[in-house]
Length: 406
Image (tube, rainbow, N blue to C red; front, side, top):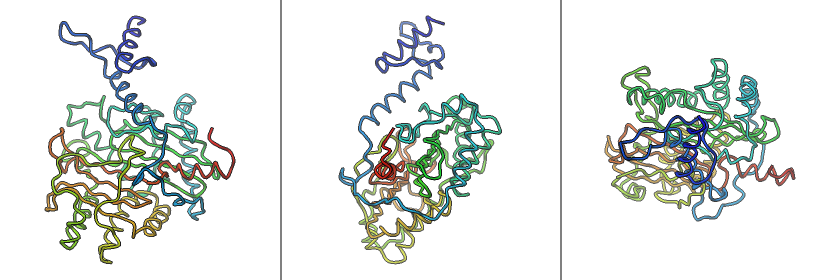
């Protein structure tokens, strides 16, 4: 075993440079005669994950901006009148259900970089405690946390993404090492509190939710929702489907626009690849407004745009979703709708809704790096101008409490 450990540490250092060995790694993978052994899958996962983190976290968090400068004053600390007590109670129940060693792996400081360590790709090594290792009682408590935090729609979407990840495992020859319903992990940042900042994160393939709480304020971004496939036609979860309304209502909106306005909304008619900007480790992306401004839309099209935004915001529990939608409406004249791709009935496309307080991206993904397909969808929801992960609220809290980051 000592020889094996040395070999794995050597492999890891060759891939990443000096760093910790990976105790969970299996034996190196055999290679054709005359070639060096290939790193085992677990070592490759660690290498890819650490490389992504090193690149993605190289800069301090600023937030998504239009020009590199954060617009201040958009997210004041205030009372929303919507209680977060059910979320706090559910988080406490979840933590109480964990064994001490699991709890130690799950808890992080509220200002920890763990918030930013999420990735859609299946290979990424997650922190915290996974559903796969949870007992039935622990899973029930974990789903209780999601149910207290999300709307019924948001909970159903999250569960269906997990189920479709099982479908993906079936489609890949029952590959349960890389895919599966329970390969999702939860971390908790800070201590659940009525007055102090805290939050939680679920992280896994095609499903990421960051949920920050301060008093009765909630920020549920960055959030990532997606799947491949988006409809299960066979297998254990046949009939499961996701993101079809988001797809269809986006297409309906662009098709409903008058010709000249549709031309302004369409940034590019040909969609040859993937277009999401705000995915993993893109916390500081610079993305200018583009497309058709809502202030130039008719009243009916503005209502349709708000209804489309609501499809995404309504994954948040109802009371807090209303609070966020009110914020979106206040900035409606500064909101832009942009489109890439065709507008035919069966088109593949990307669309973006972008304002000072919200960024929504919907993207049909390219399969195997070829042409985009409707069966693979990525959705990202962000809070621009420094309040992803509730970081602007946290900054203001530190200023007013004089506590400062730990």
